[in-house]
Amino acid sequence: MRKLFTIILLALFHFASAEYNGWYVDFTLQTKNQEVIKGHAYIASAYFDVDSMKHDGYVTKRFCRLLNNGNDTLIYSKNRISYTYSPFESYDVAVIYTLVNPDKIAFQDIARISIDTMIDYGYLSNIETSHTLADTIWMKSTPIQTVLANGYLCSWEIFIHEKTAQTEEILAELEKSQAIYNKILKNLEDEEPYNGSESYREAEKRMNEFEDSIDEITAEILEKFHGQKVVIVSFCSC
Image (tube, rainbow, N blue to C red; front, side, top):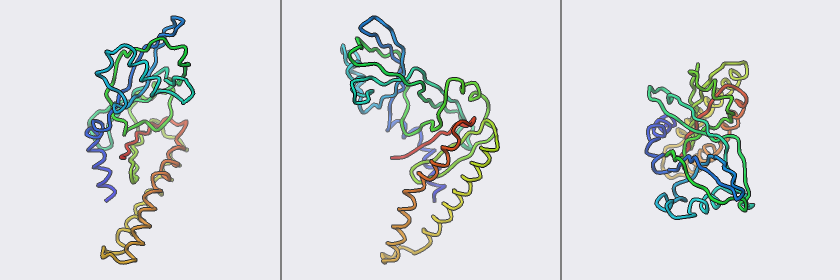
């Protein structure tokens, strides 16, 4: 059942990207001191009207509204990294992005913001690992191993570019956790046929509690890949 759920998530990736849509934006910011800053950001389509971009000042006002820390400061990234990969057990090629090198500028210093390019991309899929520009060198190599981890609302594709004792240890922990997850889930599913009984409702409650925790447990394990030559692509439904 969980495997089917994950397959459905991956198969509907493009549909979800269209429904839960946004853009990776490259923009030019001009300060009141005539300084020109090139920046990158991600904005959700629900909060940005492309047709209004032609109106003077719209982009500047919306960016200050959307890309802030609640302290009259615009938050953006200096760079955007792309990662090209083949989804788990697929010959297709996909590209995913992540923003790095955060920076900020006070609203009062901004004269104008204009958009240079917009890359259409849904926000349900993300790179979960942290990276730097230096990582883009090894990220271009072919992964030596790809692993899929299943959760309740999320699935993770793990691309190993270099095996180490640490990556092997983490994968072993992940495999053990996934086996326990699948066993507990099967036991809960088989515990009581649906008949509206109290025991069924208790089993269903335990299943819901377990499903709510599995994504957090898996994410904590995957965080241990930090600093390794590993890229993790996540896909989470709402």
